[in-house]
Image (cartoon, rainbow, N blue to C red; front, side):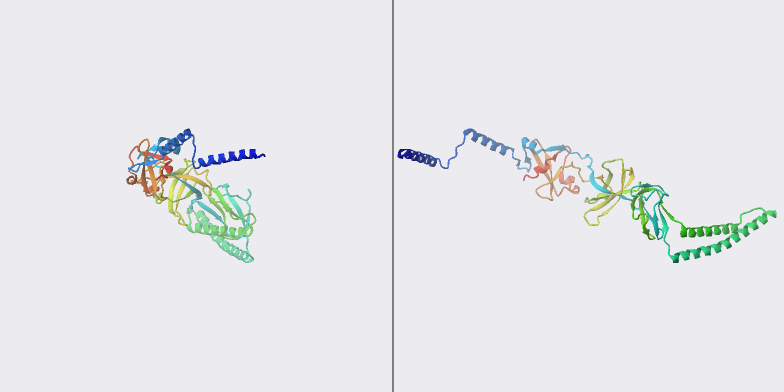
Amino acid sequence: MTRSTFALALAAALALFAGAEAHDGEVHRDPADDAAAHGAAAAIRTERPQFDADGSLRVPKALQRRLGLRTQPWSSHTPRAPLKLIAEVQAQPNTALTVVAPENGTLEAPAGGWPLPGSEVRAGTVLAWLRPALSQREIAQRRAQIAELDQKLVVGNVNVERLEYQNAVNVEAGGVAQGNIYFDREKADRNLLQTQRDLLQKSLTERVPLRAATAGRLIATSARNGALTSAGTVLFRLVDADGLRLVAHHDHPGLGSRVAAASLVRDAGTALRLAGEEPSADGSGWQIRFDVTAGADALQPGQRVEIAVTPQRLPQQLTLPAGACVHGTDATAGVVWIHRDAEHFEPRRVASCDESALTRDALALAEGDRIVTEGAALLALYR
């Protein structure tokens, strides 16, 4: 580079540095950009919700659409929305039947195979056979009982034959055949001895049938074919198809005393009757029970279903649409927003959103007041 060229480049660099220092700290904007920015700020200030002196919240129409606010007129004649509870299907205690082993022995399957849970059985159906397992001492005792009964049967047969012969002689002598209470009693005693003797004899050689006492659905089996069992062991559990119960957990105080109606959500034709209520064992709420009085064909014990429970309304209690009462800045308090006019919303604060706190005195609603049902939680975020 020549000396003249270097001098020219240095002079140009010094000129640029001087120009930069002359504009240090200044911001250059296009006048059109400045006008747009001021317009956006003004729009934001215009659309921001503001509280008026009377405590109502003014929300511009454009912001209402952004928040998705929806309102609904309130009426004191609006029916209450039912509570949705999850209930477990159980057997009613008075319809839950068990089949127990009458004595020690070995179980054997019936002709149709070993019954499985869920199968329907008819009254008198043989669920299993029990082959008694007798010790040598028990066998000896039963044989001694059979011998004793045989001896009593000999005496009983003689008495029956003697009284029968006396009746025949009286008739041949011209008498009239009449009922003889002594003959009838001896004959009944003899027949009872014979029955006892036959049962003891069968217990030594034959199997004992285990039958279903009534028709129902088999819900549990605790033994299998070939298993050894002891006297008193529960082998089968049955439930009457018309004797089911729904048990649901809830946290609504006093609900059991205020039930107006209850039904299955998916099958309103199933009739339910309140069967009682008690505190939960763990203290977390209450257990409410409903007996299924009709339409239980599709239900199975252990199944979980959704039920709708409509409580009676207390004299001072209000019915609000779903989503109307929301929590405000205080997690325990609630607020209901009333749409007074086009852009004004009035908050009505209550102690909580629990149904017991939503009373006429607390909210002072009038017929036709429009209540915010969608977006109320967003309004509650503004202070």
